[in-house]
Length: 117
Image 1 (cartoon, helix red, strand yellow):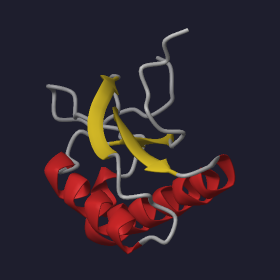
Image 2 (cartoon, helix red, strand yellow):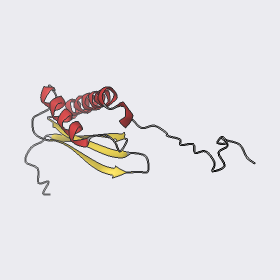
Image 3 (tube, one colour):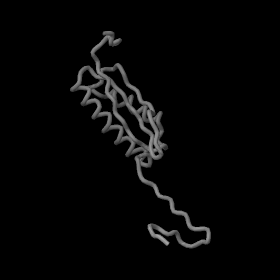
Image 4 (cartoon, one colour):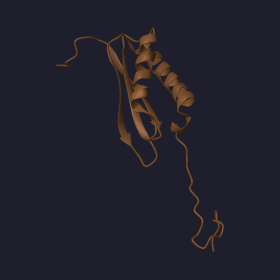
């Protein structure tokens, strides 16, 4: 079997589901700062990509490597916690939320919410 890997390092993923308004490049830079400060990162692999979209959110996939499975678990948890805190502090509007838009009828009367005619 050819596994094409020359080391036993493991790569883990963290998924975030955020609003389209999130500045992806800023999160890439924050991820880099997080792993560089982490005792769990092996200084090999780190990255962040938009991997999917839906009608409400973009899916961001952060990857990072660690020397073994227990260390990788801790790294993934650390990345998730710190990225969520960063988004909450710097870009709270990028957290997923249901948004409703009410429009007044053309006759100028008040919008009807949840009722039937």
